[in-house]
Image (tube, rainbow, N blue to C red; front, side, top):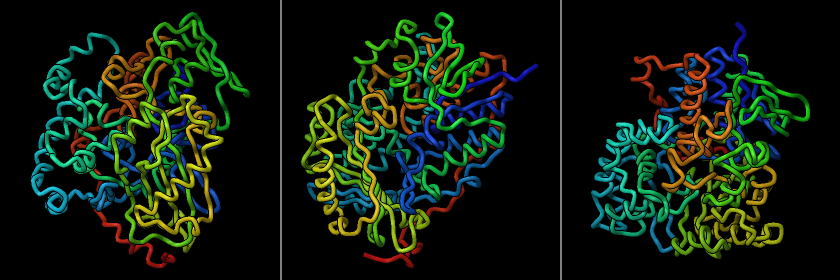
Length: 527
């Protein structure tokens, strides 16, 4: 009997993880990727000898991908060495104050005491409560929601008391911390989902917990190296990659997908896994009349995440006193969030994030130089901002604001530069409205209400990535691949890969925690 043929659209993290699992199960897998390399938004940007992560720079909760690797016979930490960062990141507040966030609870209490003595001890209570919360929600995040009946699963009913649907994440954190800065310190992670903590469901208090409990990790070579190694492993398993090959059209038999056409070939398959940006790909590729629930009109009415303004800077020297990750919170954080989500305007005092990766991984830049990755959350594309006109001024504003974390001389040190705007995300990366974190994660767009892993509108089509369940962020995108692969294989009468029980009990990252004291960069030039 011939192997079942599967076509995967997109070599992003979800598509790569799916390809590995499906190939291991015995399928004939072909991956169609519109760009010239694997990774999608989790790929590398390489310019002038500098190497940057295009998108994600935080590698969180390695358990999920570790289990996927183990299920196909590999060890993640051997294939992609990683370092656990301590401090995880530095938080600075426009209104005053700073936290060097660490999994050392005693040290965190010492720092919290300087900001708000009355909040000492609250972090431990938050950690204890969210340890239980994650345990309750893990079965939900690891299961498909294909029908209304799935909402009555015992796991969901058991987790319901911890859901608190009327609370936002900000409100939930306010139950632990009285100082608004500390609320933000443990709620800003909602930006990983592209949402304001004051609109994001309280469920996502587990995000900050994951950082402190399971670590913030840096894969050597960057997060892109994880995608690159996955593609190498998949190719060794027989997966065929077709780079620079965009899907142009789909051939349907009623509401069932039968084949995909590119500029080079036509691809038939027993099933298709779509890892492209959901809203963009489905509106471009599947005829509107062949979709009942997710029509062009219904998608246009959905809520989408924020976008990002990106600067990738290759600079002279290394900022040795700046941690690997830094997050700066604007003085009026709630105003900044309104500008992003409601008024769709550019802020004159934005929050921003900077990755100074060479303090941990000097190989990302030529000798004596280093990389700075700068991300500013901004509105997605609504027509309110002309990025071709506004980019130069917003670049200057961003460089000015970097002085707030000690980078006042960055302009004179720039030797390489690349900028991505929401318009670039939309046009160059084929992301719907440039919303880099996909559909928003409000309760009306989660679980059964999100596009389903076995896509409900089109037969033979399955979804992975941030646009389906469980949602955005690398850990849950990898989980989507596991959910989808199991559904697809069972639909074809095949067995999915499993993690041996003795392995499942021991799958934990083994890299020793390190403090990025910059000893690794002591031979680099200093500011």
